[in-house]
Image 1 (tube, helix red, strand yellow):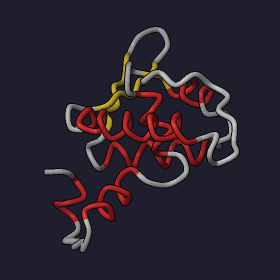
Image 2 (spheres, rainbow, N blue to C red):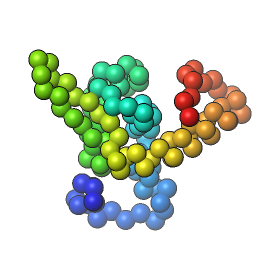
Image 3 (tube, helix red, strand yellow):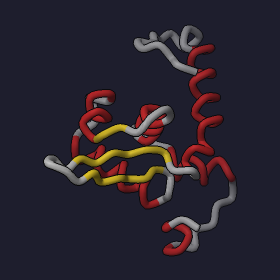
Image 4 (cartoon, rainbow, N blue to C red):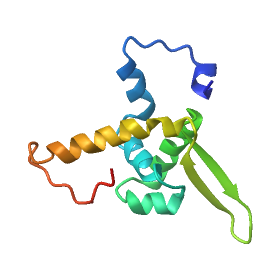
Amino acid sequence: MTARSMVEAVRYTCPVELTLDVVGGKWKPLILWELRSRPRGFNALHAAIPSVSHKVLTQQLRALERDGIISRTIHEGRVRTVTYELSQFGRTLHPVLDALARWGKSHYRDLGVALDWPLRV
């Protein structure tokens, strides 16, 4: 049971609405895409998504952690570091992310846009 389900008794009329509520928006899908293959630190995530502000990236990471989609690990040492990774629950989104990437790769020309990075699907 996620933190969201323990706090709120939200009802959805469509499963797509629920999915978009948890992983939708401008930044969450990009964060999840960056975390799909390996844990990343905050600075690495920010470097991969430079147009997101530090404040918004922090908010989005907290929301994904609250919903159990990602986990946050603190590494103590000479320098304290934090890494983020998809949780076991979050890894269930792999097929969703892959399907979205395949769709974008197949249809970007139809939409008249360019893809600047290679899609690793």
